[in-house]
Image (cartoon, rainbow, N blue to C red):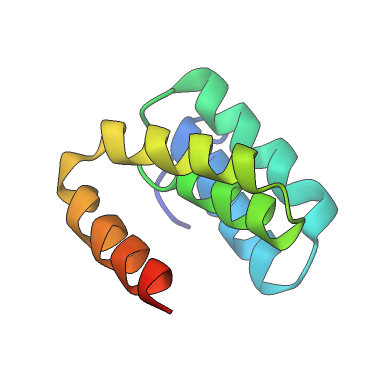
Length: 90
C-alpha cells in the first residue's frame, strides 16, 4: 500500500507513526529502534524518540536524541534552534 519493503527502515518508521496516532505508545519505541538499527540516519526517527522521551520527562535522553536528529538532517537545525531560543526566553 505504501510501497516500502516490509522490513525496511521506512516501514518501521511508518508503522511507528501510525501507532502514535492510535496511541499504541508502548510499541512505538520498539518500531523506531528497529528502524534506526537498520538505518541510523533515518530522518524523523530520533526526533520521534525524543518526543517520547520528553513525554516521559527523560530530558537528558530527549536532548541526546534531538541532537542526533539535527546531525542526521542539517536542514532541521534551524527549527530546533528557534524552538530552543523561544523556550529559554519564557
